[in-house]
Image (cartoon, rainbow, N blue to C red):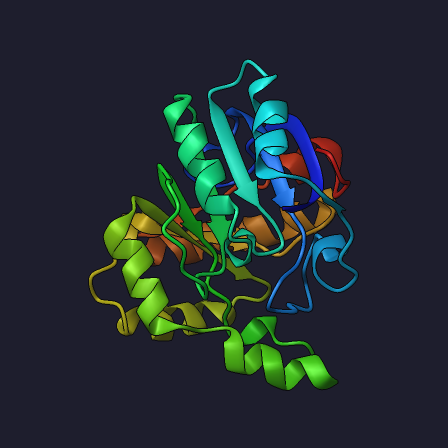
Length: 225
């Protein structure tokens, strides 16, 4: 496996925000969101190759129940399957962070899916067309939501982005409103505070939830936190 970083912190987003968690961040991504906050796993991928057993050993060195396998796109890596199986056997609560475009039969207690809307497209260049072509896979999305407990986290940059969420959800009527989280696109505490101020009202109007980004609020947008 190619790993960008492995560290212990708190979960910053979604249902388990505030929970102590070990993060396994893989590197490599099939998409190129313009607002990617871990560009060292996508636009300029960095990382070191490990056997998945070595990654497992490092994770289990922490006395921590929750493990978040993130990226990049972790489901691009075949060894995420035996890793998550071993973590489950070790009684760890496994969350997978994914854009929902790739399927592997991983073991996960929570599939944390961040669908990429039109607002994620890079403005120009070779990646603009490729990103637009790959950012949605309806069959994979439906399968992940059918086979795993899940949450959906939509990145919102402007109020009108909520219209994209509405259009996206109309294609998946099986998704319950309480599984939907709106998450502010922010890499600074100021941006986070400014966007959250209007995001709550928009979410409440639809019966959705607002995800915090505690790691940015507490530490800033830095690796290893």
